[in-house]
Length: 503
Image (cartoon, rainbow, N blue to C red; front, side, top):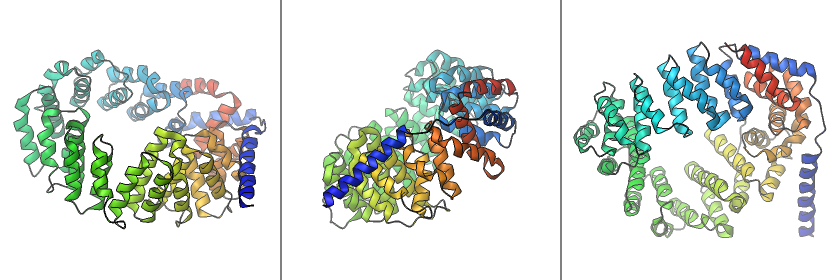
């Protein structure tokens, strides 16, 4: 009987989701709502106070149709506006933003804008070595060091050598240190002495050491391995040691035993877990992790090590180790498990479903205060979001059960907000019943999530948000108005009007 009841519930839930996905009524966006949306954006894009919020909201949609708007703002007469748009444009258009960014790199009067454009071009891999060489000739050290380092990463150290030698003499300590490290990457052994001096200087800030270690790791500077080994010693700050061990991991095939020894000689759980994360990802790491997994059954670190060994195979054993790790109720351990879940969901999809049951149990057992941005709420929101991205039948059913609770339930309110951040648009149907909630936050998140998914059932709620513009913040209005424009079929025409209005 229990099986039959469970079957009926599951089938009924699946049928509901299917019906919701297909039965969105064909609501129409009124012409006056389109006009209001256009007026909102024309006014907001000209308002210096609202502009950052509105651009961030539009960026979050990831809608390439907005590229002309961001490109137009990149050419604005105001430096701050150009800076904002240059930092965001690739988030909506990817490599299609290269043209606008290259234009800023080589023609903008502000070096801050040029540097930002170059950083974004490098991030989306939309700049050629020839263009990087041209950028090293721009008369600004900030632009030059970014371009030179990008050339080193592109294995064109020869083209960067001259400018790096000049930058190594910079009055800016960070620029000089980064330039010297890049020269070392190109085989210039004369940089070892000056770099040693920087590292041994007690006045050198930990943040600078971390930047240098990140450079060693990312550019795989084998000649700088002794630097990383020195900074991995126990007398260094933990934050510096972790970055040093990450660099050693990237450079040395013999890093496994070094990482294991760092774990053995530390009594800091946070440090040991950070190093375990590195060790477990190495080809030779499994046997070394097994040493720690064989520790006492009630030992927190041993519990996490057992989880690391089991998660690779998945299944029931992995599920049990997830449950035991979370049962430790240690914030750092929970964050560790959630980080691994994020990786596994991205890499393995529904094969990561072994996380679902223990994560749902964790969510049901915590105290949530949706009015606070606490670390505990952040962990819970991340757990919800990952279940939404996983979107296995069990994960979807579990989320549905949470959302079926009363509107006053704090976990339901947090879940609605967390699901909005999901990239998986199929999860939107779960929030359709909350469109009519008397609680503003539930209504807003439901309307925006369904609007983002293009569900016309959201139109009445989005219109209500638009009509109550004085009661809603600019970020909410930005998304509501954009989704209305998309569903009206007028978004492209509106973009053309916005481009014409931008100065």
